[in-house]
Image (cartoon, rainbow, N blue to C red; front, side):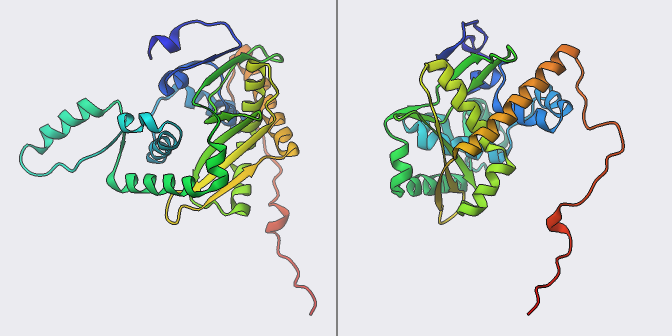
Length: 278
């Protein structure tokens, strides 16, 4: 971690820092809150068990850089060459030594990234949302209810008090992606981002928009504005998660699931349905 992440600073504040420094900072991010809602044990495990980025995460990072920081994309992203023949092992080791700090993609992944970039650029609404603002800025504040230091790094904050989030997905069909918003708790992140950015800037950010773009041809794009009720639901979840985190820290107890027999029933939609009379 560089000095940017380890230096103490006064909150609330907005900083320009690398993605690695941001993620290395111990303040509470929205992903951590999603983990602790699963269980405190899962939160603690993820926090204390560093692991290499998954291929999906590497691909997503490269897509974000191509769309949000195009001037730096060519410097940060590099295609892994094919090493063949005598001396390939030494050449591979030398190449990784020189490029291991960059985002490494395959030639096939690069073609998909280019397709995503073209598709978003042709989509008038998505293209317009990614103009007139700032990308990859880090915001820190102190939660008034728990005293915990919060952090967010919106993909893009723009005029009109709007935060824009970019998601690569298998299926951006609108109804399918609405289910993904609930499944992956994107609304928790949305409320968290809006509240922290508002606290830092002193301005009321009140719109959270997700640009969903498919990872494979034809790279379909759909754009989703979270309505007020959805943001409120996300706010309820993140505040619940912060309260759980505070209590776990105070007690130094990190349980998983309840230590008792649970009464369980399948969801109502899983029960056999009577056929309608013809």
